[in-house]
Amino acid sequence: MAVFRYPPGEHDVVRVDADGYNTCTVSENPEVHSSGLDFVTLHPGENYFICGFAGHCSDEGMRIAVTTE
Image (cartoon, rainbow, N blue to C red; front, side):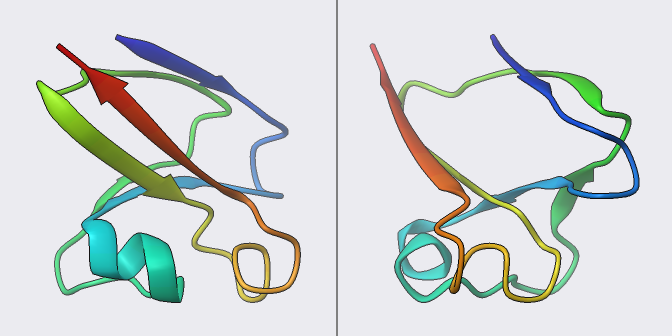
């Protein structure tokens, strides 16, 4: 499990695939968390997350990749 803590309304956490992570794009029907204190289950292998607010991923680098076993 991963915990994301941030000011709600200023950011969010969007689960994306590798392409979404590399290009800072959100697919249709994404898994979005926006409470400011998100407990997110990680899947085995690579897990990719970006901030879905405009410019936060592409301009500010707000993205993270987490590898689990």
